[in-house]
Amino acid sequence: MSDVIVQVDEGFKEYSRGAERVEVLKGVSLKIYRGEFVALIGPSGSGKTTLLNLIAGLDQPTRGRVVINGRDISRMSESELARWRTTAIGFVFQFYHLIPVLTAYENVELPLLLLNMSASRRRKQALNALGLVGLSHRLTHRPGQLSGGEQQRVGIARALVTDPALVVADEPTGDLDGRKKEEILDLLQQLQEGLNKTILMVTHDHTAASRAHRLLRISDGMLLEEHAETREEALALAFPDAKLRP
Image (cartoon, rainbow, N blue to C red; front, side, top):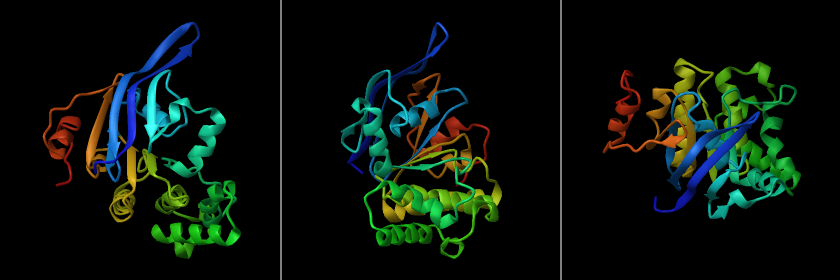
């Protein structure tokens, strides 16, 4: 995994709160390599979602540089970013963000409607994505007819349908528990291993974090320098009171 797909150089992000300037990210630098499964962890308000949004092109740094798959997205205009996100990034959300009146198939096909693509090719890609997540038998079901785990599988299929270079997942198991959580984590792990997808996942859950190859820990807008030599040591530092997967 020597190919860098995500590079953030001295990323700062500030917001205005009335006359006050609030610094959310304070010079974050990192690299993520193609095919990695990385968990971004930290307490609420630490800046992890802000960092995810910069990497996904949903926001831009106040200062610094964000390079994704060789492209400096920190210098793109809003319209350029919108076009770039359509094919470069797959999004998986905690609360699924499915459109209730559309079927599973239609929700997955939706991103493809923004591309110059024939109807037959759209259908092939949407069916393939739903097959990858094990929902070929749920094509005509609407979100209200699906379980939480099935809705998240539709969300993952939608994230994959344009074959993006990077999948970003913001608390993808936060609305699930027990077996359904494990099934979604199994699926993300299978996609990373089988399709060599690069996955960046924000999570506060030790079970989810334990599936990642590597942990990035953020606190007060800064990445913490870890001295753990193994993933297990890093997990123990991040979640000292948790019983982790072997």
